[in-house]
Image (cartoon, rainbow, N blue to C red; front, side, top):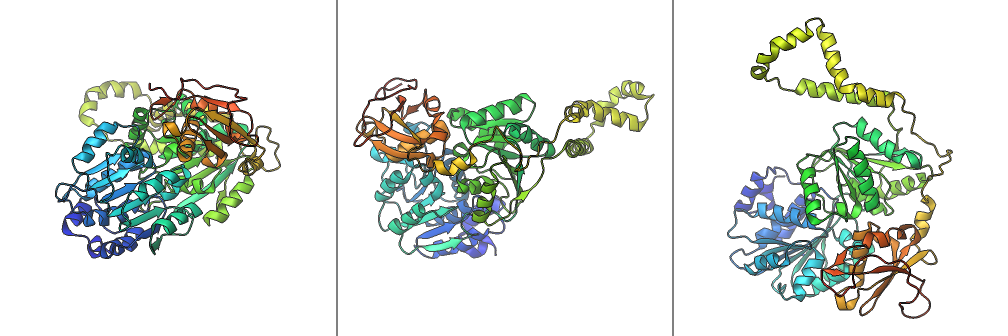
Length: 565
């Protein structure tokens, strides 16, 4: 099957050819003809990296009338990074079409510039839900002319608390539109959207629910809790040509791991919610351009990363939610390439591996943390390969040759080679000379272990939670979904750790599992919500009826919620 046989027009095929696309992926082959031939709704179940953007982007632009300035196509996605990526792709697909205007709208960028771009006539808008809701309420964007609405990574959007925003956005669009939904997993919340907003959708499935790509090798290593960081170093040293991601649970852990690795000479950078948009963009630019080998990231910050040729995904900690394991691992082995998903667990977490295996339908192989001899061999051969691949600039070296020859005239060729390798390698050899065995077993005592069994219990917040007060509410345009996102993005916790939420006129209360509550106040200190400063405080457990201000404890920094910076 080729793209020519899918029914795409000549201008789009020319753009596809320019991009180097030759053979459509499975999701493209199954989706594009169906979407071109009819005005059907579509539900696509496929992993990240299977070519979903082209699967909906190509038929979308073929159905758009670019002679009109009306907004006809709407793509909703969870993150700024993914929003920009989809926009770039759709612009590339439509470059030979007449006067296309594809506009990305997302938080963290100038809303005035985005409004000006929309007013010029945006036939396609790619948006994150929060910013899109803001533009609708400002009457800066009207969706009554939308013919096609695309929900990309629907499960991610719902997991991030965008349910109410998506409901509001779709209510502003015509009932006659086509709705195309793409998701890597299909939880009940996504099923609800398909039943409420779609009419007998055509279903396309690539793989099965929650499965990961077949060309990913899944491995886990067992270490004592105190040895996690040392184990990460071993893995990075064992794979000297790695281009990958290290996933951590919290922003604090992400920053700490990245900083320590960088100080020890590893080529890494961090991506987490405490970074400014400029810092996030700079980190992603370094990673995309491969000026760094490894990106250390939280799950929330890494959503929407679309970078090819990632060789390894390393789970510094296993995620609490198995679906996040699927999303993490899906960052590697794209476009038919192979990859590795490596997990570190402590001596109490082997049950989590069994749970993940059952759900993803794939075996996770146990391996031992590489020893010093194996690592030194890998590093040595990587050095030799780099030397062999180095081009010799004879013209520049000729003028120094007499001096070089004089220095080495008393050494054989073998001795010269050994000296060059030793000059590069001696410190590494010394470091691993006295390194011990980091591998642990289930029978080992691990005083530094995490509450592995407690993770599951903590999802039930009843009786095991901390209640917080925040001086933001309905008057500040805060709803439950927005509060979930605010807490998750500022504190780096998973939405499943958030329990009961009460939103009142000018304040709100929310509960967080005890295990995830320690960093809430510190994580939210100094942040703002839509330009408004706010205060977060611990408060007493809820008793009986509505919330009150009584019993508050620790304060976060910042001024009152109603003031602008």
